[in-house]
Amino acid sequence: MPVSQPTVAYLSYDDRNLYVAYICKDDRRLIRARVTTRDRILEDDRMSICIDTFHDHRHMYWFDINPYGVQMEGTVIDGVEDTSQWDTLGTPTRSSTRTAMSAWSQSLSEHPLSG
Image (cartoon, rainbow, N blue to C red; front, side, top):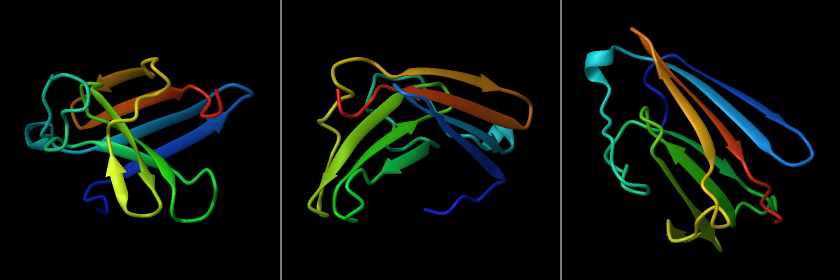
């Protein structure tokens, strides 16, 4: 789904991690999000990053986060199966969230996908 409000994403990496940061501008009164358990943010406003590690357009890992820092991740296998049953190697992804008057920002630090 395309973004409806001004949004900026920053990506960086080192030998062990992929770093993702977002700045999402919107009217605070219109942001849909809630504090809930992990993997239960399908109805929330959220940011996503999809990583096609094989560069075959058929397999990917995806990571979502809502304005409260609630996370959800999963995989697409063979281009059709979309599941949130896969978790980040059993270790929660480090994240932080900040909300200002007209924007919310996220930062994620992912663990390496190759273990």
